[in-house]
Amino acid sequence: MAMAVLIILGMSVVAYGFIDQRTPLDEYASLYDGRSGGEQSGASMDAMVPDGLESDFVDLPDFLLYELLVEQEENGSWEDDIDTTVISNLAISKHTNASADYDLNGTLYTGAEAAGNWTADNYYVGLPRVDGFAPLIIITNVNISLQQTVEDGLLASQNPNGSWNDDVSDTALATYSLASRNGPDFEPALRGMEWIRYMEVEYEWGSVQEDAKSILALDVMGTDLREELNALLSKQNDDGSFGTVEDTAWALMAISTNLGIDTLDEADSAMVWLREQDIDDEGELALAALSEQYYNTAVFDSNVLTEKLGPQSWVYPVIVIVIIAFLVFALLFARIGSEDVMDGVRKDIYDYIADNPGEHLAEITRQFEMSSSSARHHLAVLEWNDKIVSHKEGKHRHYYLNMNGYRRYTNGFEYKKIMSTLKNPTTREIVKYLADNNNSNQKSISEALDIHPSTVNWHAKRLRDARIIGQTRSGKDIIYSLNPEIQLDQVISLIEGASS
Image 1 (tube, rainbow, N blue to C red):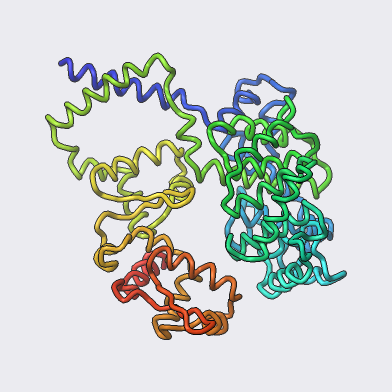
Image 2: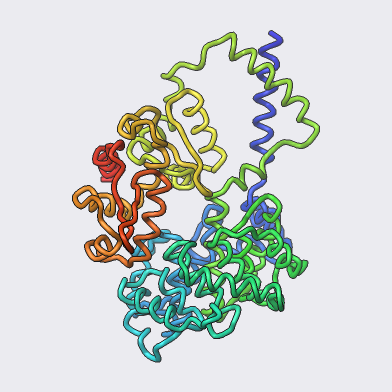
């Protein structure tokens, strides 16, 4: 009886934790109490939601993106302006991760593909361009030829000191773009980073935008940014802004690169401030929408929501008692039967992971239209009962069926890392090429697959880290060869069969 009481108490505490959890969307609710008709901070929730959207927070994460989409011209551009169109294209691409048209609440927008086509047709006027947002073209949804043209122009225009135009903002965007496309070991990006660091030490970064763009670049390079972020956050105003819409958008992008429990409130307030503004300029709207996508990605792909959850401090002693009781209960009673584990949505999640091995939490959350905390709960139950396994790589936690065949094909190597690496289509193409042309060098892979040599290097580094390939040197050439102990044809077959 006492045990039952403790378990019931534990369930009550857990229920309390879920009810009391705070997420960024809850922060918006506290500022915009549109559901109860009240107003705070000078705006209501109804004023935040565009016509045609339900007044519900589920639509709010893409509020600024919606505003941007309705402004797109029929020719695919925004204001027939390269810079505005590039930023808009990047914002849409970050949301959809695809070139297809964008469908929002039944309304179809031409989206990233049309913007990319317009950019490709109109960029060449006034070449070369290495200022403004031109460097970002190499990571937007445009054709490979234009991406390569812009990258070649960036490489040719880099100063001997490593900068572009001896300007912190231009150098930061160029470094960010090159490192994002080619990896953090790309030599021109390393030189750009060194110059940015030099300017920080010798002169300090003067403006909010210089701070923010430099943080974006340094984050891609894998640099510790605590001091730089603290310096940027010291410039935030009490209303959540960093001055102008542009400054606030860039600052929010920078904060989102390292979003954590200690920076969530600052990011929330900046995001809410942007949504409060009546933005007429489409260039500013594009930047605001891009920052919204950086923020949303950081929130849904990180542990920050979980870190934000939890009961008030007085219930922690109760939690300790409940945990002890639960452990005793677990020893006395078997785990719940498999027929209960696989009931309802958990069976659907299990089947989804079977079809999509290596999927991460954010995508599972979106697929099943449930809260992050609910998805974590169901995944935890499946993992506790040995139905699935998971591992964390970077900011993502990936999920796989337990003992579903991958392990036996990888011969004891870290199969989860192998699966995660091979989920990238270009990486798989390199492996397939090596399967037919083992002991090939970078040049032959680059020419056969029509990809840039630096891109081959970036993928090869990931393959080496996963121990899928090895490398040897022959004169000036680096020779790549497959690990014969891994049955890569079987692994790739499993991946591509699951995604077909």
